[in-house]
Length: 340
Ligand code: GN1
Ligand code: MG
Image (cartoon, rainbow, N blue to C red; front, side, top):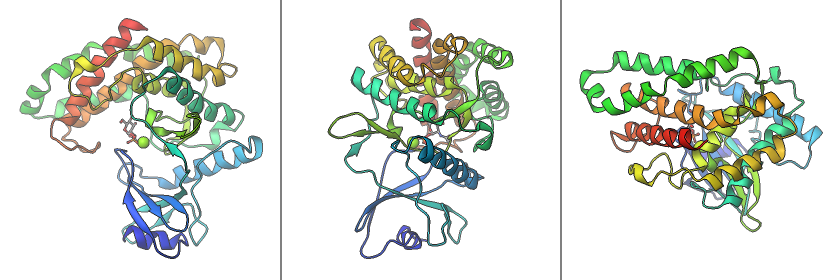
């Protein structure tokens, strides 16, 4: 079904202009210009095999926030003509439509301390305002998503099945992946001790998942809520460290451009704690330094495992891209280890 046919199912009338939007690796996203403007998304059903769980988690969060924090901005999907948050097309693809939040912009790299502080505050405000919801009501949309020991096992499985040529190509990255393995036991131990509390987390806090206000340049809201589900604070804080501290993104091929900017790190932690400081326990706070390490490691392992598997998960535009991303992440991880 065409994107235009789909928007009609959400009751959009009159002339429409539809164009691709954003830089996500997973879904197909479009901007819809009609009498009002919308964001239309076709959900990747190979990755998200239970899209109804996403819709239900989002609706529960939306209802809780409406009741407890009515001014908080949460991008909730609009119902289709049958009142559903997802519309399934004739090929079984789920689609959803959001109102476009005007006068906002996203960034792929952080340039200033203020951006780091604001974005971190934005993600933290989401968890803080959802503090109090019954965490059990929200279900995992992707199982064991940030379970480092499981991700390590997936990497090992991929390595076992990879061809000798692929292994040869990724020799250096495989060695790097193995060299950071002590982080896996640290993670396992931490979870076992039960120090971290299960909370509702965003779980994909790349900096481009925050909308900034065009005029005030403050965070307006977090977007990309597919992984809004129970998790630990280190997942959100860690993915911010991973995507904020360096002036270049995970796509950068020249690793000499990767940096750990201490001032940006401090600003993001401050922004995060400006909201979550009251919610986190003293015990949890001790694991702030661990957050960036584990999330950067997990992403390096995931990119590398995907490369070894033949690039079945992340969208790539050139054959070595996932290996290059892994190399980038392991270099960043080594810088985080030196600086945090
Ligand atoms: C994916 O939504 P998107 O494409 O920004 C991935 C994240 C990774 C990210 C790395 C569901 O996020 O976990 O951090 O790529 N999301 C999923 O860029 O796997
Ligand atoms: Mg995204």
